[in-house]
Length: 456
Image (tube, rainbow, N blue to C red):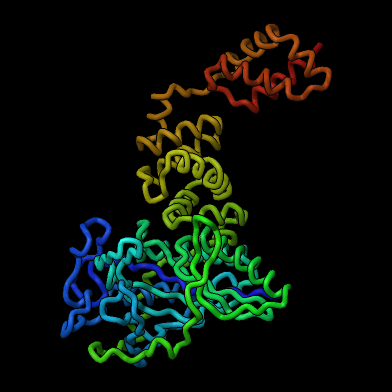
């Protein structure tokens, strides 16, 4: 059965002031209804300021990162989108006509990109409204219904969030998280919109539920009507909200208090010149330029700062060795320490020095990982960390007597290995490692053990 899925994704833009007034945007850090003024609470006679230029720049940069054509040298009206909710004190939400369109990401077409203002926060249980959030700039990204499964939709959202993070222009904190309206239809049924899903996991679960619900209705000969639904994350189900509005229901009109936007082509080109390389394009370039695997490139571009660090280190050491370390050991250390690449304090030169020592077998890979952990905690030259940890590699003449002792003291394991039990060699290797204080390379230990045991 044919499935069509599209998104309307909203993300807060990181600015210090709101879209049409000078109120600050740190709404999570202050008591309710304190970051407010007559403009963002819709008081009669209050006139909005011109649109926040930083918000407009951010929306244009996001559009360019997604390969969209920005609509330059034409009139872009700010419109009033009318509906009556308690979190909209003026009775309408300001939203621009499209600033850009015609882009794509992972084969999903981007229909258009808008600027909007966030509504307030309404608590239906207590009947309270907090207008601190009202008026914070939003970028809205509307896709075509090009996704054919919940899994494909999840992959798209992950890629989109990565692009947004690469710009550095969106709010990273929890309150500024992506909110998505999910549109889904199955062949023979009407389009259903699931409103305000606030996570990638939530969008995936809502889509999974809707596929099952709509498929069952169609199998029983019942129609799937066009409607708006809400996703109850605690129960992982969607429930009806209202029959789907049409464009006419919102009674769009140009806002008479705000001059329309006209985006200058030269100004847009300056944004294009200074913006970051989009992650999906950077991934392809890393594979081509450094001859690394796609799996490694995917990990490296997962964070802009991680990709920057990779390229700086890869200029000093074999790019393939660096890619292996980034994909496995560095990513593991960062995850264990709950750090992002932006939190890294050590320099590319320090990491390159460590990897050169591993390459030249001055350190085992396991010892290198121990040094990497210390490097992440307390940045210093690798040699100083090695001295502090006492990780001087053991010499062969020191290692051979220890191997002989382990063989002598563990004859049962030796006989087990000779009789075909391969795991016995791992036991013996561990014993040698323990006696050397983990200063020896386990691969070298295993090789020497097999060599010695093989002599009867």
